[in-house]
Amino acid sequence: AAGVIQSPRHLIKEKRETATLKCYPIPRHDTVYWYQQGPGQDPQFLISFYEKMQSDKGSIPDRFSAQQFSDYHSELNMSSLELGDSALYFCASSNTRDRDGYTFGSGTRLTVV
Amino acid sequence: QQPVQSPQAVILREGEDAVINCSSSKALYSVHWYRQKHGEAPVFLMILLKGGEQKGHEKISASFNEKKQQSSLYLTASQLSYSGTYFCGTDTGNQFYFGTGTSLTVIP
Image (cartoon, rainbow over all chains, first blue to last red; front, side):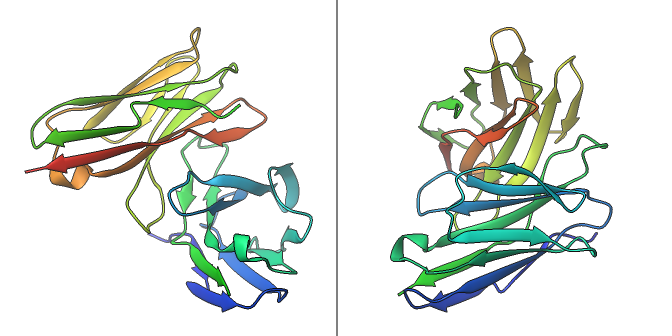
């Protein structure tokens, strides 16, 4: 079965650089979520999209932005990177009509040096 | 707004049972349960919906007390593969929050 695909798996950036993370949700899933997880912490919700429209916003810094495209893939854009942005970034998708749980991608490990 | 889980950590021997609790201060539409192994993505285990519907893993059971805004995850006859961090996730209808997490270690 198709899963949530995230790319890249690993990314190393320097401070003040920009990064773009990509997420390809499961086909037919109408909602995409982005989470940030620091070492030893629980996943923190950043932002979500329902049918390509932003549906909810969590603790996403102003330096970050995200969008969902016509093919339902989503991108998280991160600018002016800081050391504290180093974390695992997960994308998840779900089908709200099925009322199932979220399916997570394998994550992108971002390291800011 | 983040749901609180208890215990924070538990160590079991293979075959023993465990209960993980999740408590929210907000009225809930549904409760999710996920297991995450170190460095990996959370994996969906179960969803419990307001009104009693449940969907999820055959070998794991859970309860949802809508009035108390609490849920419990029951792990019976634990296996080594059950080790990981368990998160509840609470859906208020407007927002979704992961719980504080419970680290579960199963030893031989």
